[in-house]
Amino acid sequence: MWLKELFMLILLDYRAPEKARKKLQDIGEVVSFKTEGICYDAVSGHPDIFLFQHPCGCIMAPNIPEFYKKTLLRHSPSLTEGSLPVGISYPQTAHYNALYTENGVLHNKKFSDPELLKFSSSGFINCQQGYVRCTTIQIGSTFFTSDKGIERTLLAKAMTVFYIDPQNIVLQGVNNGFFGGCCGVWEKNIYFCGALKYFQNHHYLVTAIENQGFNIIELYNGPIIDVGSILFFP
Image 1 (tube, rainbow, N blue to C red):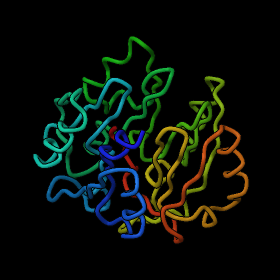
Image 2 (cartoon, rainbow, N blue to C red):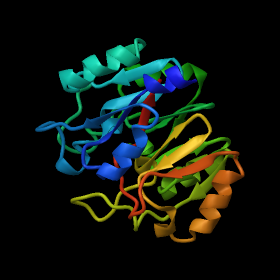
Image 3 (cartoon, rainbow, N blue to C red):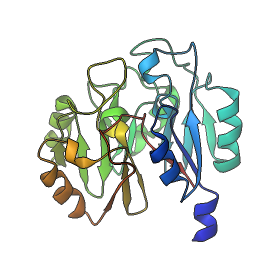
Image 4 (cartoon, helix red, strand yellow):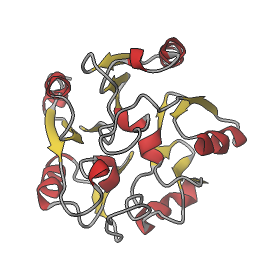
């Protein structure tokens, strides 16, 4: 287990607090993600804009900076390059921002890179939102989302969904960030870039997570920050 953790790669926005990055260094190699001139500034350091993770590997945008491509190849040999480049604004920033679930990929098919659509044979949950990974994460059998449209889509499929108001999630340059972007799951732990006390009704959120058998790890004692998801590559 020690060797597995030592060589794990962890990606998150370069603007994440230093205390959060240092705490993640206890379990792996932390690489701050940053791009310039590809997409608008608020999400320019968000790895979930350029990368889609699934159980067999990862799909990356063709215009991800070369440094990150080489870094990922060291940790994730099952790396596929998509065909649609990330663009300056939405929906060109949403081609890879999907969430893999046990029922297939959750995303807006209109915006999905063709490589993501290959998962449709095993189930594809179409929704109106393109920023799915930004807004949504699955913890055990429960989905947690800060998007009302995704909440309705999942409830219509008889899935368990917990809605989180995103108004207190910080994302520099815009009114607020989103729930999926402030956290990441590794094994039975969920890591948050910030303290859950900043969420409204945070006691209900803590209970819902713990009921799934997951441990909550707060990376620093400050406001919740959207860091483009915390992505783990064992």
